[in-house]
Image 1 (tube, helix red, strand yellow):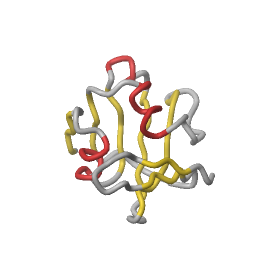
Image 2 (tube, one colour):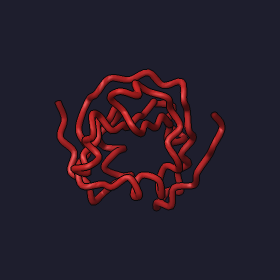
Image 3 (cartoon, one colour):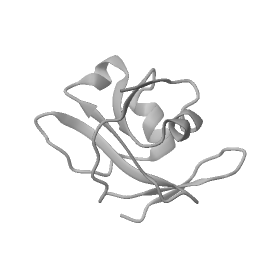
Image 4 (cartoon, helix red, strand yellow):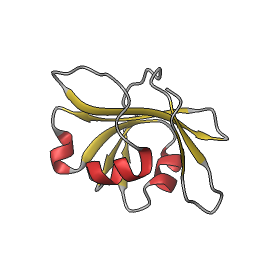
Length: 103
């Protein structure tokens, strides 16, 4: 997947979708809607467990090469709550309005 998005931040970092990222939950991101995610990350780009996950994204925020992922686990998006993988500081920069709870 080679979709690239310009994230309008003070440093103009770029988001590059990566559908090869394998992840496990490291935190929860709350207070962000599906629409908020699409504005920042584009459309979901990962195939996941269809019985448990509706939407899933894998990406990197350049210039970092650290993988990041977010997904809706068993309808958690209905409560604006998402499972996330990756650096919590980077998540806070992407979604400053969100609440992040580390495991």
